[in-house]
Amino acid sequence: MTTMFNNNPLSSPHGGPRGDRVGFHDLNAGYPGRPVLRQLTASVPALAMTALVGPNGSGKSTLLGVLAGVITATSGRLHYAEGSPPAFVPQRGAVGDTLPLTARQTVEMGRWGERGPWRRPTRRDRAAVDSAMERLGVAGLGARQLGELSGGQRQRVLIAQGLAQQSDLLLLDEPTTGLDPEARERITTLLRDLVGDGTTVVQATHDLGAARAADACLLLSDGRLVADGPPAEVLTPQALSRIWQPT
Image 1 (cartoon, one colour):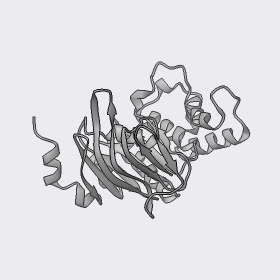
Image 2 (tube, one colour; image 1 turned 180 degrees about the vertical axis):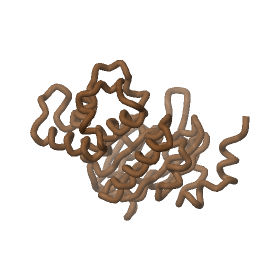
Image 3 (cartoon, rainbow, N blue to C red; image 1 turned 90 degrees about the horizontal axis):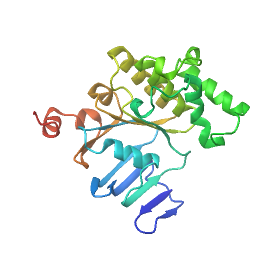
Image 4 (cartoon, rainbow, N blue to C red; image 1 turned 180 degrees about the horizontal axis):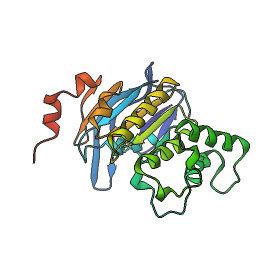
């Protein structure tokens, strides 16, 4: 699907470039009085892991929100190849620790788009939740309150929520931030396994280790695309020193 962002949004059945799961051209987005993304043109390869990298304020989360459909771009073109709607996993801080939710209830929220929040789960819903929790290794945490979990456990529960949506496009905002090295490595391995099983993964990250483990990388600074391509070519010392200026 191609969406054109202007005063009269249009859509057409044409997909993005062959081999790309998502593509965008001259993409602009932001908030009233505060533009964030500035004429971004790039693509997300299908069946691969793409890392969005850049300092705070570079536009990573905004771009992820546009791809997820929770932020509307102000102009530009956005192309989705054939596939299911994207599943979006926000930052851990976006889900409050004080909410009286168990781990299983949190994962079940991933089925709301399929059935709505107030209808009883169907057999298909329960199977999707069971499968996602088993896959992420959190089935034994189902009855635990979300706020009682460690950072790594909670992050795996949130990824299971995204996986329960049964999408072939998974978007994650800072999935390894604040985790210890072992938990970060476990999340990165899980995401690589998902790619191997046919899911396109896009993650916004500050973790250069996770970014270097990706297949493709978009390097952002001040809402603009600095470079894109394989991480070894994008995440060079010269490029990183330009966008992360010492304070």
